[in-house]
Length: 254
Image 1: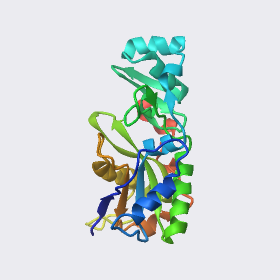
Image 2 (image 1 turned 180 degrees about the horizontal axis):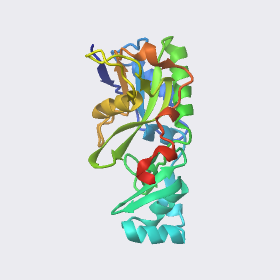
Image 3 (image 1 turned 180 degrees about the vertical axis):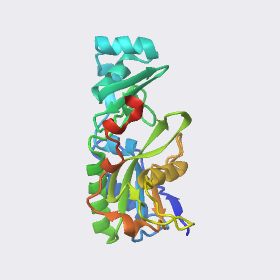
């Protein structure tokens, strides 16, 4: 099996109101690559947030007493802390230079996944309001334009408990199931798998992150071609929800 990762060139700096689907369409048409059935298009969440106008000017934020108190503990800008609180359901832990929260989407991550990179100074981009819906709209547009069966995954860069370093993570999904349940299949020795589930969307997001980079690479869209399980996992009604662990099963928050 061979999987190809193609960093899509020609994606401009995005501003509020831009049509991401059309931008990707034009970039594909101007590239030397033709979309194929089963291709998966991974898009950095900052691109979506910018286009949807989901940008906060920190100078316009008035920090609450709670934000000021937490900022003193974690040594962050109180205005940024206020934005983190406004985009969170709960604060899970406070540490040196980070706040672990559950976002309004249900993601447990550092700083509510508020991003200050790849935007102008003084601005911050929260996670898109509805990454699944954004992924669906882009997928349906591109499928119509190219007449191919595609999937779209919105990605973010997040840390992990007990490990240093950030990896690509899926926060929105359309066209493919984000979770591959392999219970009932056999391993190499013929034993039946009893609990195996693969976070496919996260694995694809992590692979794409190697191409996207975290600095000035300028490749916020990556095409994954040749993923053999696409047909098996095809789901036009998919969302990211199957990857989110219910709080009652989260032993780290008990």
